Image (cartoon, rainbow, N blue to C red; front, side):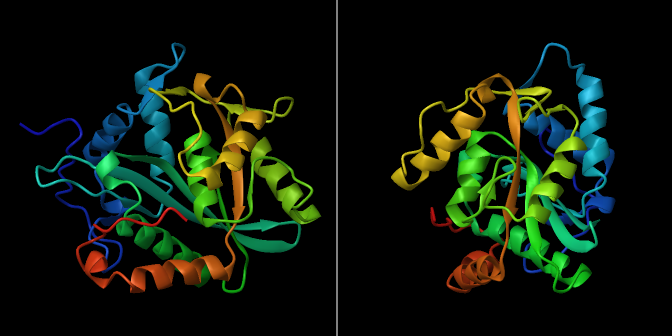
Length: 266
């Protein structure tokens, strides 16, 4: 009998090679997506006010707007991770940019920080460049403390709010994105999510280089363990794309296997 977190992927079509775990969203069935939603529930509890079927419909509606998904599975067909990527060209105040939305990202410990995840991000970068050549790339999404510190491992400029280090145009973009985010409270600057992290890690990461980002997030959003998240906006300059390419080039076997090698912490 198939597990609730074992999508069949019978009709799923691969999005890009050499990444066998990347799938076109349009080719995934509702049953496939339902298995991904069930997988997410192993990491997040729903708040008492949230009806599970309403949450599923919200999840399904957003995922259907994405371009592709990273869905690695173990030999038994059970999910090891889910990440959904939407690449959006946004026109704001006379300028264009590309917004990369990696959402609903959850991983078992054996799937975290793998080459497959780096490949997926590289594909998202490439798709953004194809859709809007020369436009700046930004990674954006709602995130808890662990997501934020993970981004800070590879990106130098990750913002949790309108920041003096942003350009005026970036601050305006952030403000526009925040206003359009369901559950965002302009008074507190955080998002009231429908979920609560299950067994969240409340102490700083072991890597001392991530202690300051951790403190920065907790200072901005002290109630994150109660299901409040920050809207995160990060610059993705060409040097970031180049570093991902260089890292993958040093691991050709992992790329051919679909991403089994472990990614460095920074």
